[in-house]
Image (cartoon, rainbow, N blue to C red; front, side):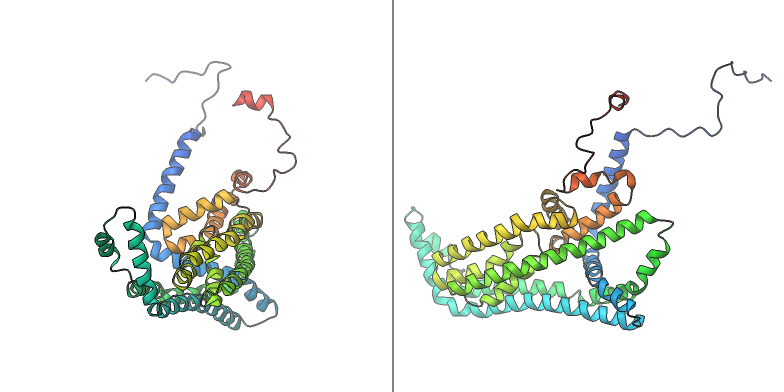
Length: 378
């Protein structure tokens, strides 16, 4: 048999433990994007399951300081869990009840405006007739638009809300088990700080950011609701307190929440005082809500949670596309969780926080030039 050739002097010796070849960065990025597409497709497929579960997680994270406070006061674990469950159930009942009552009261008011609907139809027919459109065609097109048709649409909306609430049993069960786990979860996290400090820090960042976001939204929601209630009361729109409460709830939907909240009072303004009152309601709502919700609030939210206004808006579009309406409501907390698991958990990717937030560049980064050696190495 022929013996293996001897290594020449000065040549590198072969190693049995040579490091595996590292894939190019571009290939790693493509693989990561492919995995992301698969994950997003899976989330869309199980959106009806993921949305309620994450809603429960957000509520438990929000109320968890109460659980920790009770435990520090040496309250029994079962009593702390019961108190947490009751508080969360009260929050859900209040928010869901306010939405249902708003739609129900609007449906009850519709039959009182039958004559106004008839007058609006005639105004539309006469206005379009001046543009050369046949009156018979216009009447046939708008003949089905009356208070009964609007009430039917609102009834369908109420039915959709009822269908959403039909998952209440599932949400209640998830919340119950999450609240039971929340009693001992801080102790379990503390037990792994030494082995996985990055994981504990990322989860803590998500929890703190979620609570800050909800606090900011609650404060601004109260401000917006107060202004909207006073404006509607001054304009003579029916049920101003109820629509102020609706604007408070829709304030938790970033950027576009006020669009949902303005629909009922604008419709009542059209029926109560005609197009002039409707336009007045819309203009005043846009002035107040746009300035507070779309100019001031995103800046405060961005400073509180570390997300820029652009990232917040894109997160709203993305999560609404993935999870539907519930995704729009949970867009910021979902983004904070994704940021915690993908960015904050790895020291090698935390530099991305500078790009995701509106915060100024830390001292020493903006003024430090890139060394020539690093440029040549690249």
